Length: 436
Image 1 (cartoon, rainbow, N blue to C red):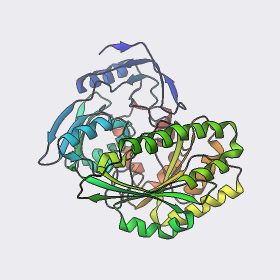
Image 2: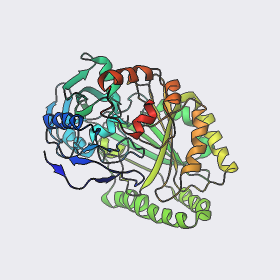
Image 3: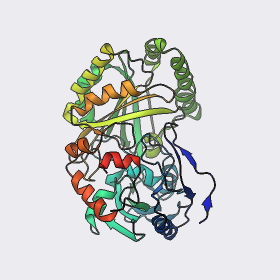
């Protein structure tokens, strides 16, 4: 492992930058451990970054930045048990391909598959689900390098507290070098996408939640229009979108045209309600079935900034009504739809759904648009409901607030004090959220 000369880094959205003291690409867990010991000898912090899909500064590495590009091996695949061990830098899209080749799949996932497995896991990336939760609930074991350079594994049976904490550990407890996943036999999903009016969606959200394995919807601000998505397992045969239909809907309209729309609204914000109205009216219904990960995920080429909060499930409809009311009070012009997802409770200490069924409300803006006033207004609304911010998405919360909404927050900090007293894995973001 040799140091690299390009020390500059920025995330996918372009709103986070860093110039590390040095950068290296370890090729093994042993080389990660050596890099941690070397950083300690030099009095430097050390972080491993993924693909930069977080909007917060969670991946910022001021001291030593480790790139996971050479840690992409598939260590083992056990089709009998469904246990699959891969290294930290393997992208989710590669994991999905490997699993599919072996007749396996993740039971649930988010809608982007560009992240590394460790990066997605450490920020508690999730999808939407009635019965099956996010990525942290599909992990069987972790391999980590701790601050003293030692390599440990943890699971529900081995070092269970570390396992509960480190599954969504923000890289603050150790550097994840390998993940063992609980996978399931591969399956098909039938996707039913249907435009609906705001009032109907809110009146039926409990019905849709109960009746579907995976339900989510998008509301187009300044309009009555929503797009609902219901995904359920099907026996098949698969009836995927044609190549032309996929290109038209998911590539051309959802990315190329949507990107052009956002460039227009960025220059002329006043036209946003009119443009959103056209977009909402143009929504069409479609039904198809395909391999699960091809239904869960979609291409995303239009760059944006995002904030997402998890609130108690029972607060969802009142919160959405209050959120919409804010649009009549504020001078917001928002071109991106607002995304709503649902999740059962999880047991990872820093999962946003820890200990409670949760609803997730995500707001976005085009990456060139200002976000501060909009995100602040939404944040004030959702924190009044004991909302928990997504660790990888923009928020202003600190340790004093987070301690109130996470029952195991103090336990996490105590474990961190024990494992990393010198804050080898710290950065400005972890200093804020953990109160250093």
